[in-house]
Each structure stands twice: as structure tokens, then as C-alpha cells.
Amino acid sequence: MKKYIFLILLQTLFVETAFSQKVIPASVSSNAVYPKLVIGIVIDQMRYDYIYKYWSKYCNDGFKRLVNEGYSCKNTNFNYVPTYTGPGHASIYTGTTPAIHGIVGNDWYDREVASRVYCVKDKSQKTIGTLNEKDSSGSMSPHRMLTTTITDELKLSNNKKSKVIGISLKDRGAILPAGHMANAAYWMNAEGMWISSSYYMKNLPVWVTNFNAKSLTQKYLSQVWNTLLPINQYTESLSDTNVFESPYEGELLPVFPHNLLEIVKKEGNELIKATPFGNSILKDFAIETIKSEQLGKRTFCDFLALSFSSTDYLGHQFGPTSVEVEDCYLRLDRDIAELLKFLDTYLGKNNVLIFLTADHAAPENPLYLKSLGIGAGTIDGSTFKSVNETLKNMYGDSIIEKYINQQFYLNNKVIGRRKLDKVDVENYIASQVVLVKGVAASVTRTTLCNSEFTESPRMLIQKGFNQKRSGDVMLNYEPGWMDYVTLGTTHGSAYSYDTHVPLIWYGYLIKHGSTVEPINITDIAPTLALLLNIQFPNGCTGKPIQMLFK
Ligand code: ZN
Ligand code: ZN
Image 1 (cartoon, rainbow, N blue to C red):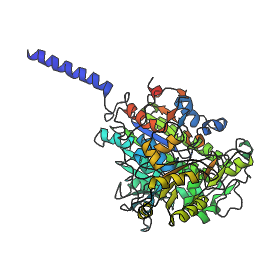
Image 2 (cartoon, helix red, strand yellow):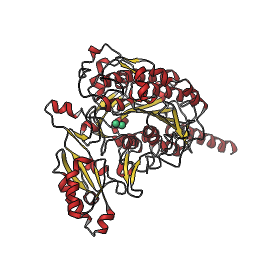
Image 3 (cartoon, protein in one colour):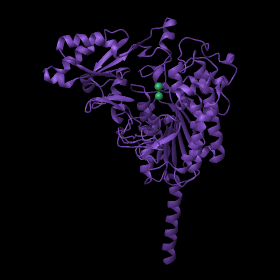
Image 4 (cartoon, rainbow, N blue to C red):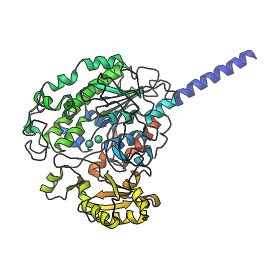
């Protein structure tokens, strides 16, 4: 009898062990069943076509390797506006849009405090990693993000055993992806040093202090930036001497070679962010993070969220068709190749799950488009001066409190004091602003709260509209029109030049292939959740990408 019970027990144990190998939670390490490390790579301002535009000049081990060995979702788009960095990173990692996660812009107007607020600013936190008492660049946290991220869910799945770290040159590019429960987020201050916030830690780990002590920023800036390949090979870009680019401070013309040794004297160490070497130092720091924190070498699945931002700084300054931006991508390609090669020997390809995407894309410079006969132009608050004056004459007071993120915030106090009908005021403004050149359409808060749009661009406005944080009259510009820039470019619209980004999956469980099926940026987080067998983020509205599981 005893023997019989023992056998049953043994059998139960065996069955449970066999079964648990199949449905083992992400918190339990297994070479074959779960990745040891997830790396999210966001390339700031990367258009999907950059993969193909520069293809012949990429090396075999960077972007080409990701495409040739991984799975490309070639038709991935942002499904809300405004297409900016803060909302972009939040939407990738929360699997939902600003309507729900609340990051409605990099900055927005906060009616309660009657001022502009920055998406990750948190005055209750201090900078960690600087001796300069006045350096507030670390007084940041994710406190304004209203939902969990996929990185939060990974930590919730195993009682916080997974390590989650976010790294970017930009605070928002590190903080929002790493979520509310991160072990750390690091970004770069004006001195070119890696810092953090008291939200995460009391002191920098010794390895970060040691990394800063190497003064790599200064080393990278002690050179003349010349093109990686002979400049006459940059045939995909405009001539280097075109008139649509901004020079660095102190530079007469925005042309190669860029003497960083001289420019740094004017711009300071922060200059590194607006050179391809900002991406290189991020790659160096990422490899150091993986080694020092033993990411992927522990019992639990770890997550490193990387965001390469120099592409965005250079895009804004020189525009998407510049030799500078092309050179930045060719160098980033080599940096990514180095990171992949390191992971090969450190963990092995099948133990790492990587996805690569962007936080938004970017249009051509408006003056360049105009020179080609294509409609384009720029708009800012002053564009609506005549509308403002008409309103003042009608109501005898300033009805518009703020114009930001293509939205008007109305002054509710004046509307209340003068006993105006708010809906009438919204409708009147909406009807007037579309008369302005470059404005294609407008939609009011009341309409957004009472209807459901299913087609772009109004659907994208609705998904970017947060009832508490957004404005009262939202605009959509004509294609080619953007917020004010003369040289370089900017982004933010609902059009594909701003919404269409790359999405490549690589490594653990990922088969080679590609699809042109439409995919939303919010589909990344739930896809990750299924690959890791964990909960979806708590505000998730995206859908898992089915092709990856076939
Ligand atoms: Zn960005
Ligand atoms: Zn940008």
C-alpha cells in the first residue's frame, strides 16, 4: 500500500514537472522555454524606409542581420496623435494610446496649475549622480503615466524578481519604457554624464560612477566628424551644401567635416547628443549595464529598454534627406552590429528577445517640399492671431488660454464668468480656425466625448485625446504642414510620414519572415506579454501580432 502511494506521488511529481516545463512562468528560468533577456530598442525619429533607403551601405551584422534573421512588420503605424517622443515611448510600452495612458504630449497644459507641465518632471525627486546642487535634470519620474507598462507587468509576474532598466540620452526615453517599478533608469545630463533620479536610488551604482569617470563623452567629442564612407557615395541624400539644414553653434555652414573639438567649446558636452556618437556612447553604456547588472545571467527574465536619441537630434537639425542623418544611420548600424555580436557570445541569440521600433517618424523639410512644388508650411500660436482678436472683440476677454500640441485650451473661468455656452464657443473657434491656411480640419472636445471615430485622422485625434489632460479644440494640419521650423524638420502629425515606423522582432522564438498586414504601435506590448506568458499592461488596447505565433 505504502509503495503504491509512493508511486502515485512520484507519478504526480513527474507529471507536474513535465507539465511545468511547458507552462513554466516567465519568473522561472529555462534555456529552452523563456528568453533570459528582453531588449527593447527604440530609435528616435526612425522612418520605416530608412531600413531600405540605406540598405546597400549597411554592414551585414546590424540592421541587415535583424531583417535577414528576424521578423519584419513592414506596415506598423502609430494610431494616435500627437506623434512625439513622450507619447511614443509610453504607447510602445503600455500597449495603449494617450487617451488611456495619459502622456498626451512631451509637455501639455495643466489647467489645475495653470501652466505647462513636462511628461516626466517630478519636483519631489532629486538628481542622483551629480555634485551640482542646481542640476535638476534628474528630478524626474513616471508619475504622470496612468497605466502599467509591459516592464511593470514583468516585475508584477514574479514578485519583482526580474530586473528592469531603461537607458536613453533623453530622460523620457529612459523613464517611460522602464515603467513604475524599474530598478533603474539612466539618462544623460548637460555635462555628458549618466545620471538618475531619487525615484530609483539613493546613489549611483559604483559601476555607473566608474563608467562616468572614463570621460567617454569628452573622448568622442575630441575628433572631427567626417563621413564614414567617401562623401560622394551618399547618393540617397541631398548635396551636403543644401540650404535646408541648421549649422552647429559657431559653424559657418552645416557641412562636413564638422569639427567637434571646436563646436564643443560653444555647445558644451551636451553636443554629443546631436552627433552619431551619442548613439555610440549609449551602446557602450548598454553593454556595460548588461555586464555589471548580470542581465540575462540570473534566474529570472530581465528587461533592458534602450532608446537611441541622436537620430532625433540630428533629424531636427539637418532633416531626413541630409548626409548627416544618413551618416548617423550608417554608424548606428555598426553600433547595433557590435551590440548583437556582444549578445552572441554573452548569452547566445536564442536566449535574447529583441524588438526594434521607433517613437515616431518625420517629414521632409517644408521649404524643400515647397521647392519641389509640394504643398507644405508651418504653423504656430501666432498663426491664429486674427482668430484670437476676433474672439476678444466678440467676448471682450481672452477666451484662449493656451495653444499647444495642435490643441486650443479654452479659459473656462472667463466662459463661466461671462455665462457663455461652452459648446457654442468650441464650435465657433472650430469653424474659424479651419479658415487659416494649412489647417485641414478641427474637432471639438464635445464631439470627441460624444462620438466614436473609426477613420484617420479623426480617429487618431480621438485616441490621443485624454478627457482630463487634453484641450478643447483639436486641429489637423494639411499634409506637409507642421509646427514651426524653418530648417531641418519636426514631427507630430497623423500622416504616414510621421506614423509609419519599423518594427523588427529577433532572437528567442522568432522565425524569419515579414508581413505587410497593418499593425498598430500598441500591438507590441500585448505581443511581448504573450511571448513572456505574463499579463497585458492594465490599460492595454492593442492586439497581439498573430503572425509571430504561427
Ligand atoms: Zn522622438
Ligand atoms: Zn523629435
